[in-house]
Length: 490
Image 1: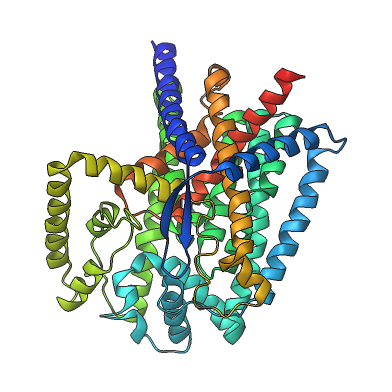
Image 2 (image 1 turned 45 degrees about the vertical axis):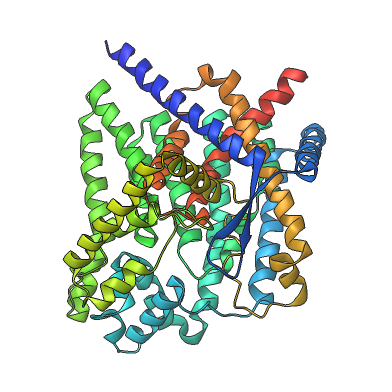
């Protein structure tokens, strides 16, 4: 009976992930999304042209040449890490050390600097932190950096980002090795790294994405080691890493959910009560890394955050049909919250009314709803930049850098990243078309994380930068697909 149940579970994951890959491949192969940097995450949806097709073909040719090279994946990976570090160092020190005003990062850093200097006003009532106390983990990191580095705290954070960016790539490399144990796959993975370098440019963002993504990938690697070797130290490491990742930025709660699913299956199939204890620890850690840190700053500031922006607001954002950014942020609810004296119940009621209006409009015109879902998927999953340059609009960049962000250089780098995204989509789809029967439940752990991100952001607010973490987890499957294709032709 248990064996049959395990097959059903495995089949469900494979079918769901296969369907996702079809959408992902269609979106990336037939469409490209071009981002306007002056406005957050807005986009044009363009059908691909011959340049896109040629780019994909050139990348395949380059891979076939690289695959024949007499160089180990570890050496190739070392070269990549040095190159990624050099690009990141150049990007950090050649651009103005400024945070775009009114961004989340600006508000969190400004608040942390004030509190570090003894002014608790910016985290009190009627403040940004009152609306978004989920940022208190990142706020705490900024607070410590301001205490240590003072006016150089933003630069210090960028340098820390650089270190975590490299650690994130290492974690993904080790995760792929743990999944497939094939040198061919590792070489294909490093090849994809070279042509999917959005993560490198994230290091300039004074925000939690780089650190949280790196810790999340490390947690996934440690958890997979635990699944393969059944050693509790790996499970403990995974728990600590995923909780730290959520503390920095709570997007990694999807990884925690995937871990809980696998641990629950261990309880059901193997009666491993230690796994049940691990689930309880994960849930407790989640509480501490989210609400616990809020409780801490409530006590320090003498403020309560019960009047925060209600979570239903993010579902309203998720169904907001702005054609330039479907499913994205709108400030209407934030303004309403402020104008109504931060009474969360009033804002929640207004949010439900807005949601009813959105659903009514979709019900009356179902074809618009499906177009909305398609466009929301594209702006999230088919944006070749994944907002890597989305934070530079207000900076006075040097000529070469400005060209990469706004000029012809941007067209080139977008074309390369767009081609790489299509190659990733096709290679992963190839793997699940012909090789899915060979994949075990352990090998599908990153797929469960990706599916969690996909389903969650289907109804929640979405940005390409939020989805990038799941794109990174897709790279091991793309590498396996590429290597399988070459192996069959050998």
